[in-house]
Image (cartoon, rainbow, N blue to C red; front, side, top):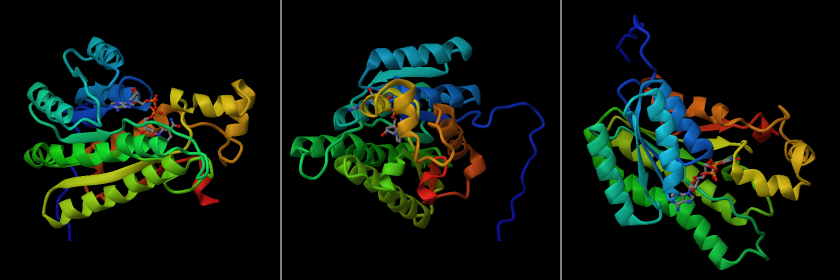
Length: 269
Ligand SMILES: NC(=O)c1ccc[n+]([C@@H]2O[C@H](COP(=O)([O-])OP(=O)(O)OC[C@H]3O[C@@H](n4cnc5c(N)ncnc54)[C@H](O)[C@@H]3O)[C@@H](O)[C@H]2O)c1
């Protein structure tokens, strides 16, 4: 039986005060939103992206509010050497790493008859292989900074399929199961390192622009895209960010190997 006691906070400290987060794909969209929300709750951050100018913009916006809280790093998540350098630079800057957010990803389309092998390979490389490479290299840092949390951004597309999303469905389903395997390994090894996956439905970032265009564009396109979502709208980045914030904080200290659907009810149907 768990015999600890919850300490009520007496001062207004942040939910992730003192945490040291490494966020991939932080130049824009969901990753940039996670960076802002975690920094507002007291974390320090390494914001990495293949688009280094974007990562620098995210870090600058954070640092304007929270002095020296964020560092931008150029980082292609498909490249093992860049992972080593980025993790090393981040740990030097923050004094360790205890939150790893594997967020960088690409959206790709094509059915089994039309999708090229290159489309398939690139989708797996950026969305799946990157998490294998990066999490393996991050493990020593996380072990040195327990309790730690790995947060893998999957998608509802990892749980329900679409005929036009062959490569993306397969990639995001792989992220879902990888997360459970990592979680079980850590728990059974006695590490206080949690690992969970987050599954957003369409969220308002540029990754869905082609889908909105395909659905007719503008408000009409957005309406068509969201018509199967019971709550009838896109996810806002913050809707996903609050889940990430919970998983990054010690509030989720007994939560591992779980999947979190931020989907307005779509997967219940
Ligand atoms: N927005 C959605 O509707 C939605 C829904 C479900 C899941 N997701 C997932 O959320 C994550 C973030 O997506 P987003 O919506 O913010 O999209 P986005 O396109 O706005 O951001 C993705 C970021 O990843 C970066 N990136 C791409 N390839 C990279 C690489 N090789 N190395 C490093 N960085 C790279 C991009 O430069 C970009 O900054 C992705 O994994 C995506 O699959 C998004």
